Image 1 (cartoon, one colour):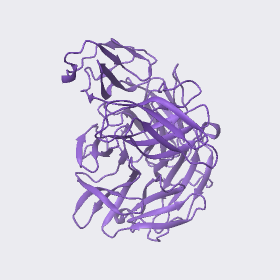
Image 2 (tube, helix red, strand yellow):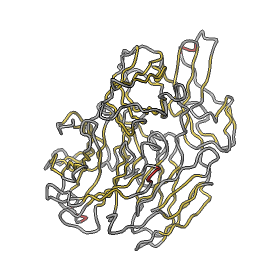
Image 3 (cartoon, rainbow, N blue to C red):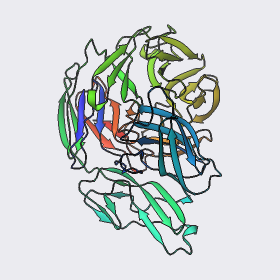
Image 4 (cartoon, rainbow, N blue to C red):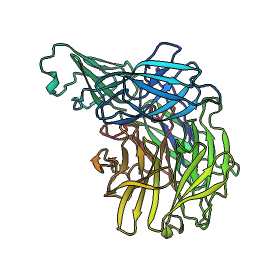
Length: 497
């Protein structure tokens, strides 16, 4: 395993590498300054401006406990109406809240109140409902240490307004006219524009470039067949060995992974051997106080006995303490069987067959912004590639036919949509469930953004990204950011030379 660290005057971060799982910290999402008085609850995340008719996730953090032991939380917005879909408690001081803004919600600020019946916290203007969106400004990409003047296209509500303000947040490195400090964190910036009484958003309006890949760092893997790997990284990034596979940690041909709201990493090992039930799941702690510690290994978890290739995992807010993982029927690779979703009880280690289809062959799964399950699969009845939604009980809700066999279905926390891989040669596209609208996003000469996960503490709202490296590879791996039209702006593409 390796740790990749950006040496920044602003913030340094240490993140792990799990055998064939490369974890790279590009520090892509700038730290949010927060809303709320010191010592009180604050809103963190990429953005807290949202349009009516949209859904998103955001985090609430505090220097005080937000929930008492044994109690449950409720959250509400005023004046509303804003629907709280669910609350995930990472720690008593760190929450993830899923919301949906109904289409008829009036523009303006919304106050958030969180309570467990004993403790109550309120955050003024935790959310602002927009009057509209604006096109991304020009130029779309700026360089570290550079400066420019942003050009923003006109909007009908600009007419007759004499007062304008521009907030190029959220990290304070950017000023208007725009100047980028050399120490700014690469990644995107959302543009908040007010025109008189109206508020507008250009979400991920422009990007700050990482600069050229100038460093080649050799990392000793500690395991065959590749005893080392050379990584090409941008300036001020480095990498070093963290751990090697052992009988204790159970790492065996790891592939996809999942990170829960408590900063626990689940690595899915499909195993080097084929046949029934070769797979296992290794669990590691990502909390800074116990960073990288092995928490355990789940073995003998194929409740169906049908084997298959272990593919993807997720959790559901309505099923706490349960990890759901999919298996694919992949006979040409020696992993026949599968076509299942299994429920694993993390407290007992017991598993049960949750879902099976003789016609759907599942690959990636994730959780949508309302707490349902999104599943990428092929359909042998129609001969189509599809992305479908299932409710927490496994019942079909809706789905879309797509133009690619999905290796990736990942929730975009800012929009509630999903980014999926796009047809060859590579890159991603955004999928809106249930409308099935697709928008091409990043492009690259590499394959699509395959297995990989963000950590919630510094991932969806920060910069820890976990991605697999082929176990057979020995040479130079280039890690590079995708183009700044990417839906999450923080998925590194990997090109193997």
